[in-house]
Length: 310
Image (tube, one colour):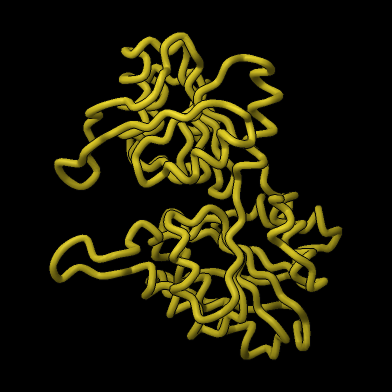
């Protein structure tokens, strides 16, 4: 097999390659002065099973274009199979029409990846499970819950935990983690007066005197997360932590988290940590290189990927 790293998260690509005990394939992915993307694969990949690792994170449009051009380069280099390993799938939040004359951008991006020449997609914790159906090629959606569950058990031992879904849409995801931890579930009822702004209305479930663990797939501006932490503390929670699959943390999000009641925000390294994230005392990342590496190995060997989560 061949593993190629895009520019969005080279440390994660290296971690996957290390798990598989293969070197990263030499490739040059760069931009001209006008930001036009150019890709050159510097090794022979003819007839190879190629895994291209690229999160479509900030700057989302640039990283997406790098992914598409790299797929095209591999297709024209006669790779036998091209798997786009997209730990964080950008545009996933635009998975439906939210109003008149609005796009379904997640479907558009899925079409672009397929048309570019990818044969398969490997991703993690899609914002909505139905996005798998947007692709006309096989798509494996991994879950961070087992990795988070192991970290929670190690960090908090026998402390009474309540897994909290920050909204109704995340209940299934939160319930799966609660089941692994054999803990109770709480739900935050919120409303959005406008895009990017949320207000906590009610908390469903008992949280008083317990450590609350907010579990979500994406933290971007962190406004919802911090508001939820404040509301839980006001309801008598002993402490509040958050486990989120993808730490987008754009704009002033890191400052919000640092100033919030959250004693810890834990994310995976699906998106490379910024300098601000590395310096924040209450933000840390968990490595998912071994999880993705094992999934890549199983795909190559035509073995079950879903059994990773049984």
